Length: 398
Ligand SMILES: Cc1cc2nc3c(=O)[nH]c(=O)nc-3n(C[C@H](O)[C@H](O)[C@H](O)COP(=O)(O)OP(=O)(O)OC[C@H]3O[C@@H](n4cnc5c(N)ncnc54)[C@H](O)[C@@H]3O)c2cc1C
Image 1 (cartoon, protein in one colour):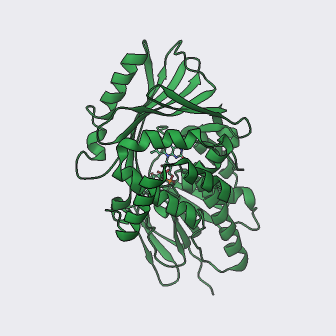
Image 2 (cartoon, rainbow, N blue to C red; image 1 turned 45 degrees about the vertical axis):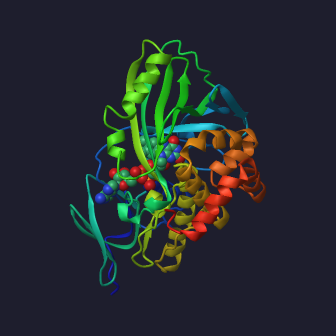
């Protein structure tokens, strides 16, 4: 008799990628076609310390969870402003709470799905017939494993990128005066060795999310951790707030340290797939991931349905970014590392010389050839040619 594993698919981590894959799968299959899925997550509850922003330009199962939309976005640098508007596909926000409530609602009646919270995965190894997922509650046998745990430091190409470190506050500020239809993506701030800017989202006429963001090259010190101590970014943000606003109340914090660099996803065999940031789904040059994560989740859910239908239990990494975009990102990061002081000027030029739709497609990882060409033409050729050459000569990007 054929032996049955504990589950067909173990999804490790119920963050953005894990919940997206499970929800896409639940929406595209039914009891007759779905594999049995176990979602494993150490956190008992969400901390609601994340919001995801993205251009709402592709189908996804979380539309009803969107809490804000901004048809305009802008950049500031030294008194100059670039503003773009696109009523067709707004810049949108989903909170962690809303995403996980929507996912839970869509998954709760699906008998094939089991969510194990309070469970930590220690390791994954190939067993005799299945993959063994070693957890704090014992070993689980699975035909396939999708691993969305954060990437290990050794899988990051740290010499080819930067860290995006940010500290943000959601504030109640009556009469803040910012236009609630416009998201400020970058308001550049003076800095000596990193690229610093304020990211400001007006959530209502009395509420703001304000973040101090820093693109920082890892050269030993300061580290991400140093930047997030009270003397680091929180202090820079407090200083900025005291200059601009009065009478605010802090509602919640939002802090992060994202690897803006290529990721080498770990491999095991064709029954294992690294997904989310671990699988390189986050865009290295921006730290955006939501849209690409939805495309990845859709592709993986298709593979899972196929595997359940055919009995061929295997997975392959979905192709989420073309080679040209991948190369452009590497050159861009290389140029930023070489000349961080010129970054504000380059970002301003790029946004001033391209159209709103080109920008949202490019940042959402779905640019056409003309969009990529427009972005290249918007940037000064000399520093980027030099960066491309240096990259070709020194592939590690040192
Ligand atoms: C504060 C913040 C704001 C962000 N804002 C945006 C944004 O506006 N737009 C955007 O596109 N991107 C944004 N990002 C970047 C990116 O979209 C997020 O990091 C996103 O959550 C990545 O999804 P993920 O599933 O790969 O990782 P996560 O969402 O971090 O999920 C990983 C999951 O794995 C679990 N886990 C960890 N260890 C184990 C273990 N041993 N066993 C089992 N499970 C484990 C974790 O608890 C977690 O739930 C933001 C990131 C942060 C940190």
